[in-house]
Structures are given as structure tokens and as C-alpha cells.
Image 1: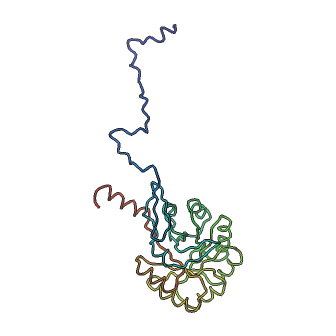
Image 2 (image 1 turned 90 degrees about the horizontal axis):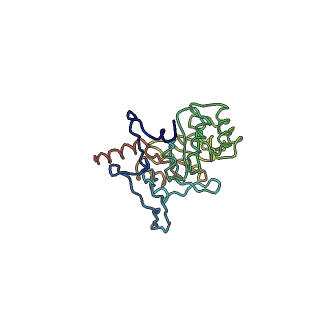
Image 3 (image 1 turned 90 degrees about the vertical axis):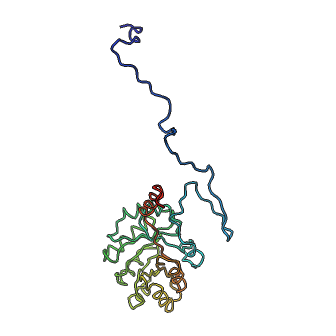
Length: 266
């Protein structure tokens, strides 16, 4: 068959398929495309602080401003930390403006989880290493691994004895946060064992426990849960807390709110 013959279609041949040159990513009239500004959002607060936000930045996981305004903060390696976001949600960790992350979860600690959270965190990460589900030498071993991975500090849960605090403190050079629920002899022993920061998680009684510990130990750095309202946050700060743990909404909650808006329900 000659070249000329090859180029001549036979009577039974199907018509050739012509593919248009329009890109698959070129928006058509039937496709709704979000339009965004070409420049970042820039503003200045009443305190004179300049704020630069990305074009797609979401304000959904922002810490209550009262924490930054009223907390004295805890300085760790030159960074003053006033707000700790209590979450292990990678999406929230990436998008919150908290000064630090308190990553404590109800399973035994695993270095692979710490590494995953460190990958997305843009601020110091304090990771739980046990004390409740996990006990004994494993707590100190997990703390050592967390330090090597780059964690800013480790958190040991309330049931852990003072001996666990002391052992862990002797094996790492990052702050050990001891969680407590009361101002009692156990808390006193944990402070004497060398806990760098006391984390008060006493529910509705948090402000009361903070006040009691502050009275006995005016020098100890205190981190405390702020609750779900500005009034409780203020009460905890006024009681003597240096920094506040704040629980942000989950990504699922935020997604539900967004979908409700898309459906016109709000």
C-alpha cells in the first residue's frame, strides 16, 4: 500500500475523532469557579500589629483574642507561648494560629503519630507520651524518641506517679509537662520531681485548682484548660494560669457548617 493509499479513508472506516485543544482545566460556562483576590489580605490591629493573611486563609480555627491579650505566657526556648491548641487533627494543626499544640490522645504513644503531627505543625508541638494507658519505662523511652524527632516538649498524664516525672526529666532536655487534676500531695510530689510545667485539667474546677497551686507555688509555670466560654477563660487566667489550652472545633464540625452554608440553611 502506498503512502497516498494509506491516507485515503476506506468507505467503511469510522470518522476520525478530533480532540479539541481546550484544556480539561479551562472553566466552562457551566462550571462555577471561585474567584480569589490576587493579593494577600493586609490589616493592622488596634495595638499596631500588622496582619498579613493568605488569599485562602480561613479564620475558623483561630484562638480567642482574650488569651493573647491577658495571658503572661510561658517562654520555651525563646518562644513565648500563651495559647495551646488541644488537638491531634492534622488539618486544624496546620490552620490554627495557636502558639503551640498540645497533642494528647487516648491511645498508647507511637513515634509515627508524633512524626505525622510534626510534619504539619508550624508551631511548637508538645506530645503525650503516656502516664495513663502507657506506664513504666516506655513513657521515658517515648519521651526520648519525641525529643529526637523534634517535639518541643512532652506531656505525661495525671495517673503517672512522681517517679515517672523524675525519670523522664533525667533522660530528656525538653520540658516535661505534668497533668494534674487536684492541688494535693501527688501534685506537690510532681513539682518536687522536677516537672517543668503543670497542666491543670480539672474540668469546671480548673480555676479553683489553679488558684490553689499558684498560692503554694508562685514560681511554677501553669498551663490550664480554658473551657468553652470567654468568662471561664478569664477566670482561669485571673486565677493564675500562665497559658491556656483551647479546644478548637474539629475539621468535621467546620465542614458541616460549610456544607450547611452551601445548602442555604444558614
